[in-house]
Image (cartoon, rainbow, N blue to C red):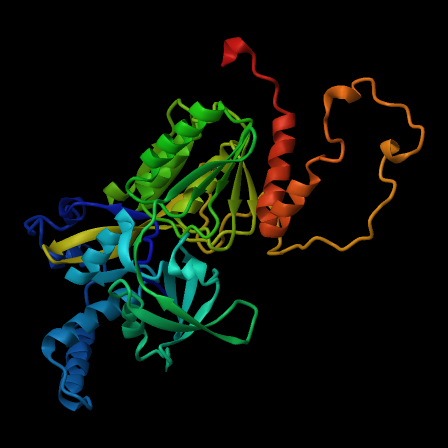
Length: 448
């Protein structure tokens, strides 16, 4: 399967010199083939393989049912070579580089989904908040079977992917199958200019903050610091917070590190290890926890991927937060963009990343501290109770402070039920967070 660049996952940018130094002495620093030949001494290219490639190339050029020009064939050969490595390496032409820039800035025209190629189908990794895809009810794990009535096949899958994007206002119909269902669902959608702020912050209950990060863009960390700072200035330091990373497909490695640092005072955030020296990095936190040590719960699901997993792993291994939800996606590798010229580049996997405990989550994901099934709840019907407390009994003694006008029936259960029926996982995370907040020693004026 191959990840398409809808909300890039853990991207690391390097200049050409960072990888061309691996070339043998005398090689041109900016020459990609020279860099590729750096390992030729230990594993030389077999001449018979070169002959076979040339024969296949010539057979396709002469005998294919439709005439194919040499430029198209060479691009297909390069694309196929990279696609055969892993799901995340790919060749980027001018259009691909433009899409790369759109993804890292969070502004493009389309539907707002990250998609992977899984065999001959397009599978949804995650929809982005408040986009045509999320409003239509598309969820992680859904499969796109048809686009505008045309069946997605192995032969047309690249074209089908490109059709997902288009000018704002243009219409498209996706035929999808929801996860664990065999029913086809037609979803008419209208493409939009997707420019979604990656951070939303609000007070979910008095004293408790809700932080939603939908993807990791260039401005995610500054935006988080600004919006959380405004909330604290208005309501005071929260007793606890929920960081919602569900259906977050990832993004920039540097943004994931910065967000992790915002909630940590010390400790390792993430390490990366690869064959090139520049791919071996170690990121550590600095003093300055935005929540001043208040309890933190991180919500995750199977759409929480890559950069979002870096944050989850950093907060979990540093014992800064409890992870609640479902096992995460499990993308533990880093891609590097290696420019070939002004209009072409290669996005290639150059490193694995490891959580502070030295754990690789590749193809494993992060196991939550508190696992939640993908459930929904509804309020049960029940007969009205005539007597529900001492206050309903005849001739009961009044409370000595009964004149304070409090509603004894308002115990918070109605609000809890409303949240649970709307978002079960979030309601459970709130229950966990309140328990953590109760166990936290009260802050003294001197320690604030």
